[in-house]
Image (cartoon, rainbow, N blue to C red; front, side, top):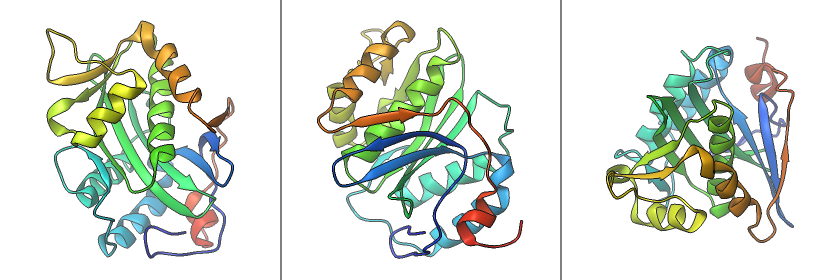
Length: 214
């Protein structure tokens, strides 16, 4: 595993939502919950001693490390059956964790934090998965508070099809009827191939990723 300078040769496996492939790389998006508590606690400990790149893209009004740690902490108390609290991570080539996003249902799905220390593929993959998860809730919008977004992230969201409602300028939004359109916008990106998984079989992440007993 690698989070910046953290490395382990064991392949990653878990609750896989989708795989995004480009000519040179693949990114897998996984959902974390309380079943991953031991794994997440070990990952948090590793991240405490990791320096994330200065150009990390963020949403959440905190440092990238604080955003990531808060999201991981939330995952430890999220039930596997809780569809209204989501923590997703991106993993590049089965080795490198490249980003994290968390969202909660508050009438709509609200993004609480996002930190991505890779290129646009990881960002697109995390947003694509979060939109897909929001779509499952029926008639829910996905909302990102604008005051907690980096300038580059605002431009990125506008490019994908998020908008700022005239009566709600403090957020970037994808309304429920437009979710499919924005998902298709992401999928139409050059060299962006998506495979989604209908069956989300659980694999013990601590045992698989750290090669330890559960």
